[in-house]
Image (cartoon, rainbow, N blue to C red; front, side, top):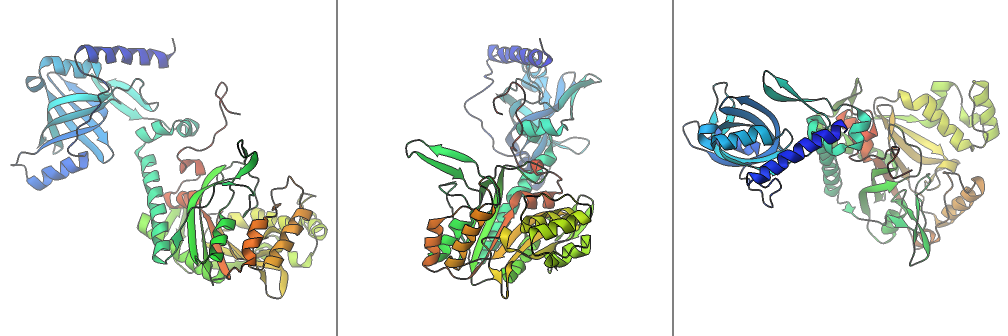
Length: 506
């Protein structure tokens, strides 16, 4: 018998013992008058000469046996509270049941009177207790040991792979992980608050789409059997949000899931959370200003300061952020001026002369993008906007006046990674149609950069789309920054993982 099954068998026997003693291990109701924090606060406000009676509930984290008494700690979502059990109050049989049939990890309810111990800890003198849920397995990180006859628990669940696969156990034993996801919730709340104050309207757009678009990524494909129709999980909200500008909603945003069938690394997960907004009568300069204001305020509201620490770097998010033209940034880092190389072949030869091995199938824009990723991005620790990108990798952005091959696009970088992407949006339907046609010719059907023709979107543009600025940001990456986490899997509750042998999946 494996250790796991042996432990489970022992606890199953304890479960039956509880039932024989008349204590249902999974009762239908739970009664709680106070959280642990509320109980402590009630005692502090009442004063030590007042009687404070409470009913509390939580997971048992520690148990110390001392003859005819026992001390335990239970933990709930608000904190921990010490419990004090006495045989002369509960009876010897009940105290024995506590010692021999209750385990660390079980959920308990207890009621009684609060007091302060000689060491100054506010404690519940238990008049009654019952179990709320019997844990049939010890938490993976919970290693029970006997120290001078007392059971204690040590949190040692630090294997990342196991933590991601069993996030429920990770949350249960690692308080700092729970705090990461509380921070994530506050980040999303503050993003909404910021945009709502500027009179943006939050909307919802389709997740299942007949035509994918709005980004350069390979989609996930599914099929609707009744309609006999292939559909795609969205890779972006963009084309639907901009349709709403046509309809007269001048400021719109959405926070939701996107799905991209692409590589997985420390900043990418196939399913991720994105914020996108679009604002009429704005260009990429105004979007830059709004972006730096939004991120700085969210950081201050969530962490207490616009100055954060990320992976050993002190980063100041206070506006204004540095602005650096893409051409100048690449020239400074690697000595290649891509403006002197108007074709992909010419730029490829220049890269080869520097000892690089560029992809022979890449377009000029993708080669420029590779230079940015290799030479520039890792150095962008302090917040920086890189702006003015090649037209052929930005089919939805408006060209710069007098320079049709360059578009008004920026990407925001912090901590050596891309955080956001934004454009002065293209609102000329004839130009947009030509871009779609060019993309279809320039890229193979399997290429992630290929953007399919969307006739309905073009029809919407023909009704008239106001000039506008658009923005997209990975909420997961922002959470990484503000919680100082190096990997996206640390800030996604249930990240995608390769299936283990014997499990369903790949």
